[in-house]
Length: 238
Image (cartoon, rainbow, N blue to C red; front, side):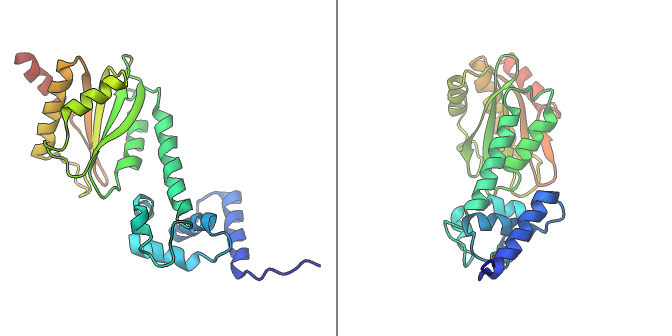
């Protein structure tokens, strides 16, 4: 005769795992996703109410994943051990999407690049400036966040961008940054920074193909709007 489990949550966790293994994540409530992840760090504790508290605090699943450890730990009951699953899934997803675009031509595979940028940048609380480094055939060599915080002309340094490009032996670049406000329309600072970057890169023989601003539900393309071509014309006339 088997010994009955004294852990009331074990059966519930087992059912969650079985649901996922048999049907995937479809049909799961967001709090159930969080609950499943919390069990990775606390396998013997009932995490249902804690998961609901996490969703109540951060409102949406993306915001849970984007929260810093110190922010997560403000929720009573969360600590370094049981946030393990939440931090792990975000890190794995970031690496998966980044690896997926390495070696691709983003000028021909814009959808995958936008999917990566949306995942990586959209729900961040702070502005992040990311560079996609391309080789001479416009294939992705590397992606890297170079600057974080409020992006002003004094916070994004063209020389640092050029130095990183040379270190990665890049021939061309794509810039991207997010607007935490959700509005993807460029500010005057965004346009000024882009012009400085285009000019600095041209001096060093580097091509700038694009600068994308990622908003909450949309994006803004400097290339599609003609800004990059116009800036190159300005450089040629200098």
